[in-house]
Length: 186
Image (cartoon, rainbow, N blue to C red; front, side, top):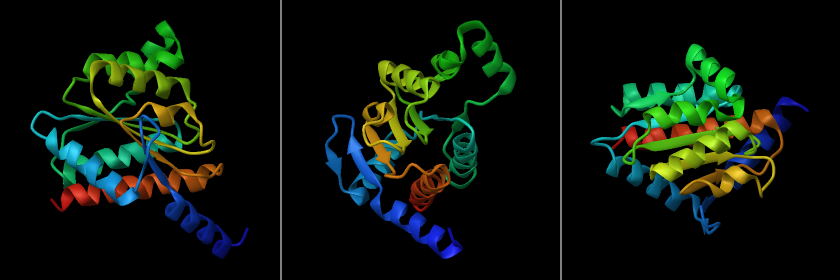
């Protein structure tokens, strides 16, 4: 693939990203961002935005944390402390590592941004379920298959219709940059 082809494919990912509610109802992307920003802004007083992802997605959420804290003045916590995560994984299995850590920190007024390219990572799915059970606001970013399980767990779900890791991760990064830029401007 040439550089031009790669960038054209990325442009397609960006422009075909879908937003849905947890019920599966399709949302216009602009209105979904309005609701996402409003939900975070509404919770701002006591809000902590929790962020989770694996691999490249972990790097994406680490960058989002930086922007939320420094540029937006919003408290944010990335759950990727290696000693703590490895302790939870050792005791309860890697599929529960994020859920166990999140269960210690998240509150009803908080939000979770859960990012998984495949939307099928057990550790991300379990953590999203914990956040939902507590009553926190859940935002998901996924890709690959349109019926991936993460896409049903968020109050708001962003889906990138691609099975290319790089394209999906870059699109998630752009979407979340759009959100933090929007929050910074308010």
